[in-house]
Image 1 (tube, one colour):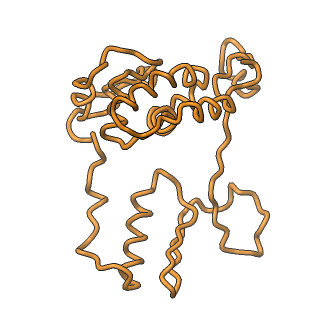
Image 2 (image 1 turned 90 degrees about the horizontal axis):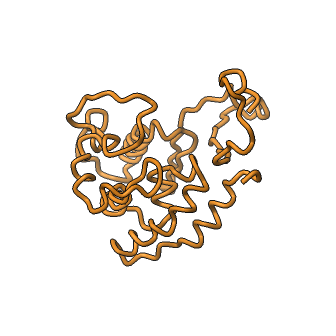
Length: 209
């Protein structure tokens, strides 16, 4: 908050905090002699270890390079004779889901919506509830898309792992849990785990709330 005061015209208050969390980054230090040094000097690169007995371990890395990590794992497994590779990897030239077509640019202030889905936007807009807003940046149709096409199976999947609402506004996420649970129950036979999510969301709330 003290850092924000250097940039905002109005200094933020503790009551302005909508969610709070911490993250752990898995860093690999290959030099035992340098144990304890500052983490900023440790490489963020991933490491793939293939043991003689066939155990494959992936350490380090980051989400933004997950496809590179997967390619390295398959290459190492192929070289070790653990799997048969059908040909050269094509991941580098394979577009992510929704990446085809479009090209329109949006500003950072643009509210999340169907345009966030790229070429899959028409699929989202065709689902039931495209006009029903459950929370800022989240419609019923977007929640249904998460369940039907992104393998979301419970409330936490939708509000934390697909829309990220839990990390942006924990109170809004808690208030949306009932609606999301109803959508999940109408789309699948999987338990929504609503109560578990609400208990989890409380941990993200700042004491001022």
